[in-house]
Length: 92
Image (cartoon, rainbow, N blue to C red; front, side, top):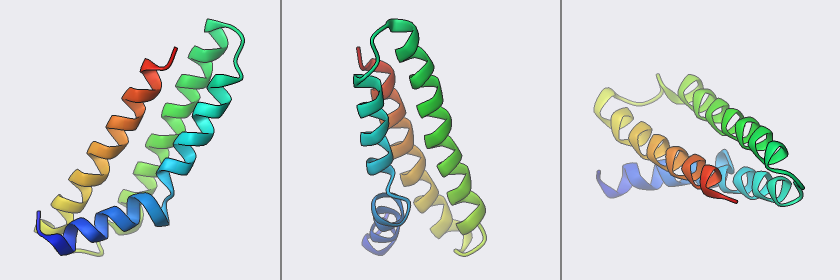
C-alpha cells in the first residue's frame, strides 16, 4: 500500500470513525461487568457495534475511490477492525 492510501485509511479508521474511541468505551463497559455472562453479552454487543461501523464505512466510501485504491483502504480498515474485535474476545 502506498503512503497516500495508508494515510487515507488511517484517518478514516482513527479520526473520522473513531474506532479506537469506540473500542476503549466497550473495554470500559466490559471492565464494569461483574460476571462472565455479562462480559460475554457485552463482548457480543461490542463486536456488533464495531462491525456495524465497518459496514457503514463500506457503504459510505465504497464507491468514492478507484478499485485498487479501495482494496488497500478497505483491507486496512478490515484488518484493524478484526484485530480490535479479537482483542475484545481476549479480555477476561
